[in-house]
Image (cartoon, rainbow, N blue to C red):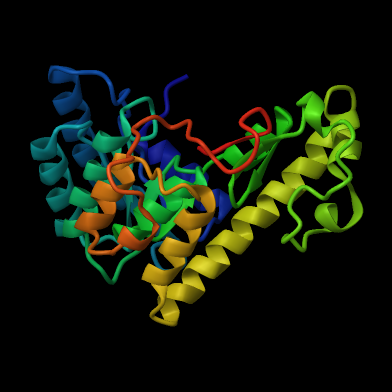
Length: 292
């Protein structure tokens, strides 16, 4: 099957989405060499073909996608090339594909620093709550990911402290809700023990966890947005990090990103106790809960 930029736009015009994406050339973030440069320049060529093919510019917003791998020079060329085309919005693509977290946040920071502040800035494929909070601090506005429902299929619930593994045997007799602070239908009506009994043998378990996880992400997004509007985003970030890392062992990459974002998180950091892994300690049993 051959999908051209023109055909991609024609299909999206027929679908009628409010936001449509230019066709880009995506390569794995861990790839090195000339293939990255080739993909970046092809993406810039294709954006012009997408613009020319776009028949509904007044009611559909065409976003360009920044490519360039982990190369700051290529990313800068692509960002500036897309900005020159004055698009309704911009996406940062080619991330969340296996690169280390330090490289991830630095690319996001570089791109958001150059993309227009008055246009939506969308980081593609980002779904971990921690990543969303960090990217928002760096100036990103939009995200998409299957993570809330995909992780639900593995019997995992999103909670302020990280993730709760409902398949674990410790859940078998736990009569608490998934999250006592959550107001979703699942937390109001079902116990951890009941969901534990479902997740290994009944699709309803995954459905209930999907509902809860989506509710959690919606509340996180609403609270994040409200904190920005109210001028309380730094407080929101500290509160979020204190719940996820109650011992203050915030990953070093998060601390570095917050420093660039000029958000003081010293009140929730334990001195000299940074870790770089994505699996972190929490105040709950490590067999039950894991921060991501």
